[in-house]
Length: 439
Image (cartoon, rainbow, N blue to C red; front, side, top):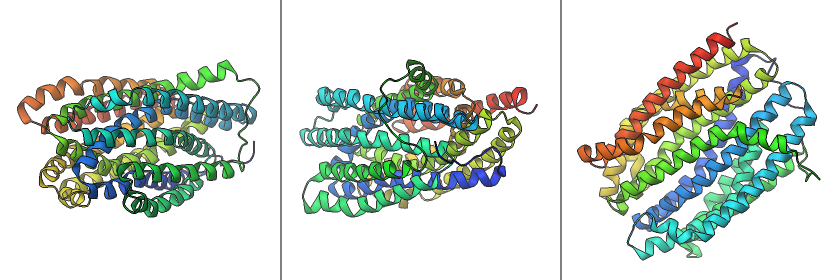
């Protein structure tokens, strides 16, 4: 175990901001992979966008499962670093990477065996769209090996207080992807398969760079024997966040099938709007990562005063980001959608999505930061239960509201439940602060 950024001593606001900004930047660059793909795929038409969008839901399901391992390992490493137990931190890192590889093998096998069933679930009744979706699903499924690894590296680097290195590495990957995407899609005439192949190649380069730079802090090595207790610790600590994300993605898949009843244009509009919304989601996700790492180290060092002050700073930042995002989505919905597609029907559906969901952005930001705070103190179950309950309610609520508002009923459901989750998670963590940290 080598040096790390000790976040139990430095000025709180400065520490949080310096940690959060590179994480946000790295999140933007992760998002850029999808945006670059969508910009070029959009030139192939709404059918290609719909194919990629449907396959992407099941890739995101794998990322949700990966969250279990990434979250659990990140929290345990941060706690051990804060407590100055470096040997245990090393053991948790190596155990986490072993679990990551195992998950990839299991999940890709699932995608390969059930690829036809997965694509047919959306009832496109269009052989061309289904074939494109299967191609994209398989190539990006292979690429989850690198994506899972990169998520783990980012989480561990953040636990060490280093968010700059992931930012720099992701910059390299995105720049490469910008140049390779049009070459694979149009020059090599590989279509949506080429978009997935270009992204997989760039993610593989990132994994190699992460491995090289990780030697600054730790060494990844295969252990002769892995501790069952450490595997359980990682799994059960990360399970609440992971299952919440899995459930979120599963419900999104169900809602997407509901949206598909309005045609391929509706699925394409949702996919594009989700990519735009992800700018907000991943930006605040950067702050979430900083909060989880900051609170994790200070929790391990038993610095309740720093946890309290750090939480206040993070909530102010999250509220500010949410207000800015709301204004952008509501005012600039049309030009944002036109960046990706020109189809009139797709534009109208996507604009309505951005304007309706845009109204809940402040509350989404509050929910995500509270989730990071709960992870930092090793109590992710509370935030996860809030997410699980109210995300689950989206299905029956959407079923009712679509009878009244049509497809906009789906967007109203997403926005309304987000508001409730943001308010409730903030209220409950205020109770946690009152009884545990303000003392």
